[in-house]
Amino acid sequence: MTEIAGHSTAETKCGFVALIGVPNSGKSTLINQLVGAKVSIVTHKVQTTRARVRGIVMQGPVQLVMVDTPGIFKPRRMLDRAMVSTAWGEAGEADVIVLMIDAARGLEEGSLKIIEGLAKSKANAKKPIAIALNKVDTVKRDELLALAHACDETGIADDIFMISALNGDGVSDLLEWCGEHMPLSPWHFDPDTLSDMPQRLLAAEITREKLYLRLHKELPYASTVETEQWESRDDGSVRIDQTIFVDRESQKPIIVGKGGQTLKSIGAESRKELESLLGHRVHLFIHVKVREKWAEEQARLREIGLDILG
Ligand SMILES: Nc1nc2c(ncn2[C@@H]2O[C@H](COP(=O)(O)OP(=O)(O)OP(=O)(O)O)[C@@H](O)[C@H]2O)c(=O)[nH]1
Ligand SMILES: [Mg+2]
Image (cartoon, rainbow, N blue to C red):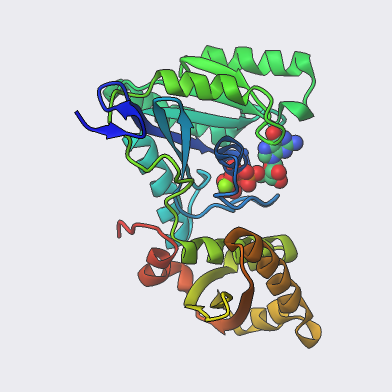
């Protein structure tokens, strides 16, 4: 029998927990809260997460692989379709599904559509489903109870939790429930791992987060960020070159800003976070390029970690 960090594989448990829900319901905030580190970017805007992000959570002999997914919405571009199919694909492969619902928004159409989809798949493969009513810090108790009742009536959930992904309220009960449903299995990851995301991709995501926070309207959705170069220097610092791709020529000056100010401040914010993440100095160079229809381009989507199904 093999031993992993003191636990024999006969008693270890490990499995995948897919966090799904409409955009902005708080999935990425929850995975960060559970992992105890920022593994997935968060903004106040919808459609922030574009590809799967895995975070590893240890509970004694149980290893939970939490899977953050893009929000499920009505897709238009190839990028959107790949995002939504990633979310459903991860739900299909997971051992447990947690459906996140923003309690302040209640059972809106988007969430009802997901419940419909889950009901169909539940008929084929019975797997535990929990509903997590999130952002309970923003709603009144009686509204919350009415919503929990309505969720119960859908018949989709084996359990319903009331949580605040932001401040951590109720999160440990949800985690415990997930742990109880993990199958006997050797751990998939080294228990010290926080995430399986490559550093280059995480670095691009951090810049994209700053871009989302800084830009408005359609611009965030018209952009993508790639890390092109990563060069460690002898003095212990690292030089990172990134490119922001935009759809149209007219978008470029908005990202760059007057006298380069907008790009400069996006870069400064990103560099600060990269330095604290990597623990050494970072020289960050961000270039802006126009690439029409990048959101329809398989290579661009693969670069951000999306599988293309055609
Ligand atoms: N008040 C409050 N805000 C929250 C809570 N959880 C998340 N938020 C906020 O909700 C917004 C969206 O959070 P995200 O974690 O990015 O949501 P998401 O579901 O990952 O969104 P997509 O990636 O777009 O699908 C952010 O502004 C969060 O700070 C919560 O428990 N309480
Ligand atoms: Mg997200």
